[in-house]
Length: 52
Image (cartoon, rainbow, N blue to C red; front, side, top):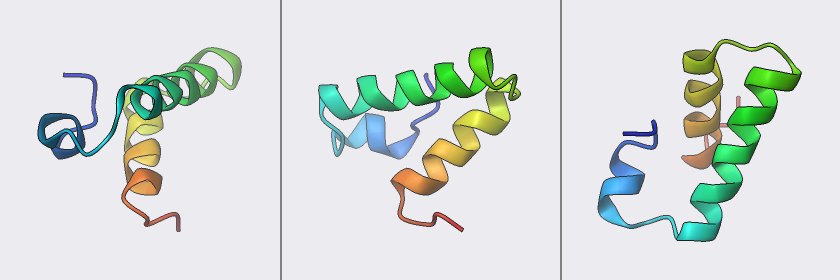
C-alpha cells in the first residue's frame, strides 16, 4: 500500500491524481529531506481536505 488508504482502495482518486501525490511525496522526501511517513501523512491530510 502506498499510503493513500481508503482513497486508493475505494477508487476515489484517479490514476493521474495518485501519480501527482506520489510526486509530491517524493519531492518532500528527496528534495526537502522530510521523513517518508510524515510526508504521506501530510499529503493524505491535504487530500482529505484538512490542510491545517
